[in-house]
Image (cartoon, rainbow, N blue to C red):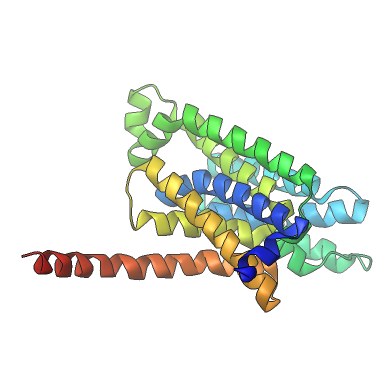
Length: 281
């Protein structure tokens, strides 16, 4: 059992594990709605569209999380504005703003010779460098996420099936859509400093998709996705410790692998049930 206990003897590994579990919980709640509503492109665009803010914050000596938050806010407001004023589809608006923000970020990076932020850190963060202040911020973000998800649960459900029904029931679908986008923004920004842009997207999508193979009720998907996300974090950190691989990238790979494992096991379950039923006769 030393392969399991040795990594946990290091304080930074314990903080990484706890921080990863908090991120997994946030992403499980938000990611379930992202998958149900088919908003995966928004999550990815939000995560990668933060590059200009991160670049500017780094150049100005400001906290990276501040730049990420500003870029995410611009993305959120811009998508809604372009969709309303330009009469474009939601996906088209996201795509245009995503490309524009990403291009702006690359221009800023290429124009500055003093830019010293590692691209790997932008994509996968530095989960092993999580501090107690980061854990506090993630815990607060999780609390806000749970409160908003609970308050708007009925509106989100109605919005997922038919916005007209939501409007008829007085659930204010436009407000629900804004809150849902804000939740995606909160999840991406709160998690970005610890795990980077790609790992945020991985934990937003993969655990929720894997959980959807086994359960259908929204709350059950959220709970199982949180457990699967935490499992991916723990497995990724252990593999990273023993194999000497990049921690964030390994956690992301473990999360994606969970989808394949879950899908494979789900196809085998009916076969196993049939064999069990035959043996009992």
